[in-house]
Image 1 (cartoon, rainbow, N blue to C red):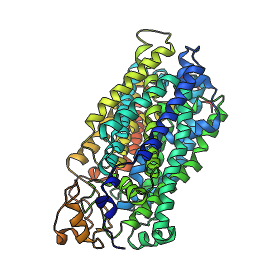
Image 2 (cartoon, helix red, strand yellow; image 1 turned 180 degrees about the horizontal axis):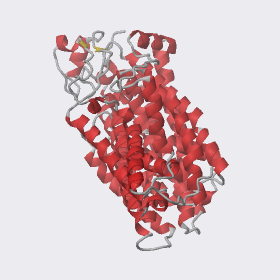
Image 3 (cartoon, rainbow, N blue to C red; image 1 turned 90 degrees about the vertical axis):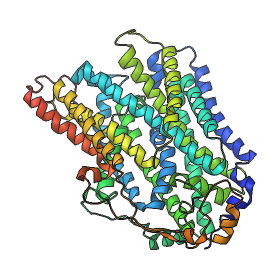
Image 4 (cartoon, rainbow, N blue to C red; image 1 turned 135 degrees about the vertical axis):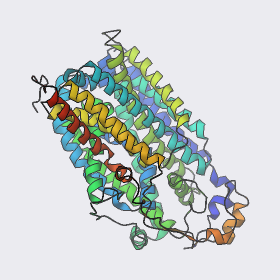
Length: 561
């Protein structure tokens, strides 16, 4: 099928959203804000901090499960996963299976301990286990992790949509950020859980609309699958043990399992929701219900990636410089397919930003809890009201908005998120695992193990970035099927600059070879192993140091399950 991108370039009004699209988008923001306002009015007489941050442990299982699912199925997943399939292949789908490892560890090891201790901040456990210094260090690492991650989640989608749809970059950043701050600070945990549930449904609807419309355009999902399969995009079984191979069945399942465990098992944002239900049994049910949800949503976004590749298989828009990053593929695909149907692009816009809203609202609630419990209560006030929690959330939200200015020079957002989770989340997962599974560990082992893992994984991540070690796709991208005469004529009217010589553009972008062997082995290691490597480092170093310093003679934390 010959592509000329006529709709994108010829009909200038298609580049920007219609009034109907903005109405749909505004309606999504309005519903989210209304939920926060509802709970602010409903619970206006309650000033208790735990009611505000933990919903009084009265939430129902299903909405909590949906909230857990939506919080880290963010805009990064919705934009990055289809782009990953488009650029590489479907190997990433295996991360949904890796969630089984995470669910088992979260439901039966981590959450029961947090629930029985009746704590607000997960780092209260760290102080009981490894002392105050380790608690403060862990809290600082966590705050850095979440603020950076929220900034990426807020800025990345705005940049991608701005490039293709004309939606104001900083207008969307500020609008989404302020709405998120509004309903989170007004309604607390209850508002977060119910808006997350609503936003999860919006995300599903938006991705489903793309999948159905794209499949119909190509003549069916089976046609799209065949095209992708012939061009090496369908791949599920790759068992190469080489740690430098970007994605294999082994590393996505195992490395992905550790990645999810860093999110579900010890991340304050997830733990806070998991312990907001009436009992440990309810918490375990909410966690395990995430598996079918994870399987469905990741299968859906991977399928969108397959259809998107089939649609652009002979005329790659990145090679043509129509877009500059693969993260902009979903907005471009949306405008190509649905731009003539007023309102539907707005649904996909709402889908993407619902991913941002759910992640940021959960993150704000969690960061506020950590700030109050770990940095205010121990030094200033033993009793904190819900109003103090509100002020903390507003402050964190404004910091997140400010940090969005500093993430403009980033690479592909999916891999960036994994690197952040590996460098900052991995050592924390290792610390909690060491505390709960290694009764011989003492405060020296915990502190030194955490610092060593953080330095080690940060060195690998930064070394990989500085040396520009990138594992590139094996499969080529082509522009051989483009209608270059039409494209070059239309580009003269477009605002996006691109090469004007058809001979240059009508070519195949060859697959680049794997990284040269003279790079240091750890620099060539797949990013998906970072979290697991950090955990192993904490366990190994922590054990050695603990044994040298006398180990732990009295393990005071209840380990009963």
